[in-house]
Length: 214
Image (tube, rainbow, N blue to C red):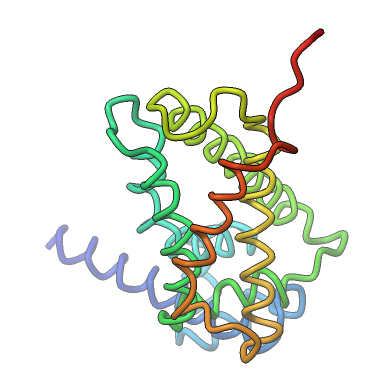
């Protein structure tokens, strides 16, 4: 009986997340109330508050669940025992772009994040979470690059901080372009080629070498 209750609670939680995703996509985050989500999910507002204290908590979990498949690859790029950390880092970027084209849920969530999450004053907790995600992303990319250097896959004098910023900007900019100009580039077909070109630039560009004291 307890197990069934837990399963029902999980089912309700997922139904709320599914409804939030659709309502956020339709109305934008700041214009969506928890009452709107409750109505779309077919639950009471009390059920919403049982699972999520604030709209920002709901938004965060909605976003996190589409990123979970990438966590294993991110962890592999940081693992000192991983033989090919650069390959894992490249794979994270490719999967992120290609799956956003092919997976309607992932595409919808990124559409909400980039185009329908108005960064106004009452959205403070979501803005803070977004900034935290960005900082964590930059740190993990730089860690993956440092791991690649240790395996001889990148130049030892690579400026990893600048390189991480470039990778982060490339992926984020590509996702925005994909959503704003869906017909401009076929990321589904060319994600691997474009990401490879990006990492070739990191590997070969003199502008990304650390300056040494003379």
